[in-house]
Image (cartoon, rainbow, N blue to C red; front, side, top):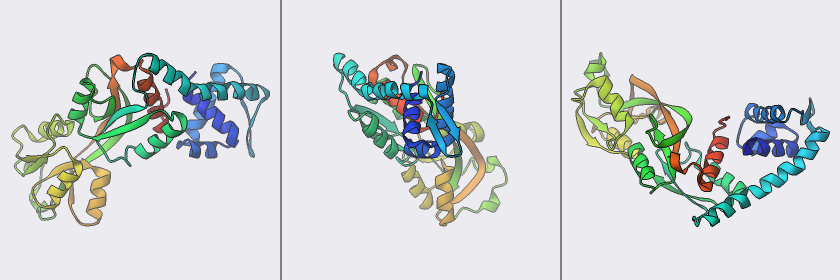
Amino acid sequence: MEFYHLRSFVVVAETKNLTHAAKRLCSTPPAISAHIKSLEQELETPLFIRSSKGMTLTDKGKLLLIKAQKTLDSAVDMVNLAAENQGELIGIFNLGINQSIQSLKCPKLIENLSEICPGISLQLKQSSTGKIIADIQNKELDGGYIYGDIPQGLTGIEIKKEAITTIAPKSLALNNIKTLQDLAPLAWITMGDYCPFDEVIKQKLGSTLCSKVQSDHDQSRLELVKSGVGLSLLERSIAEQEQLIGSVQILPELNFQMPLSFVVLTKRLNEPLIKAIRQEINILWDILI
């Protein structure tokens, strides 16, 4: 029985409506419905009577609701007690992020933690994939978001596939670009510090890529492209916004998708703080286990 299944059950019981419950949990009605069905299958009993008017608890559902609420109310106390017994600093999770806080849903994560685990707070560190991996391995970060394959020793939750494209200065003459190989001799702004984006460029254009400057900060690379320094890779959603306002051009020849995952050290999976944050990440991104 998963913690978030109970959480969905309690909220549906309170709202009597999948849509309202999903809105409160920042999820979707199909995801919440799946949580309820999974719980009903595990318990081998229906918990709700479904009708056009909404969701009404069955008699057994009413009995379970009391126990489920008690379980949720005591969950934070259990986590904090276990953590205190181990002498850990409760409430501080150092999180590495490689996108904007909005695209990674950090405000909603903070809100959820304040409601469900009020003793836990986040300390955010903007960084790059390579640095986040190194900092997690060195225990300078407790977890973080990374692009690409998950290295040995880390355990990850893939949250989405990110579409990546190439941006170029407005001054670049696109009629001179006929093939991928025409991109290789152009000036590039690469990421450095073990970024899987760089590996994709080298695989497709060759190792003799002309890298004029390196920056692991998306906004800095974007500004350099706008200034005419060279080409670079960027999340397509951001690139399309910039193209709409006429600040850059998009070159689709190198378009690809890159997995984005939340990762922690495998050997820390049983730590109470790690467990709590992983649970919230699953809920935040509607990941069914």
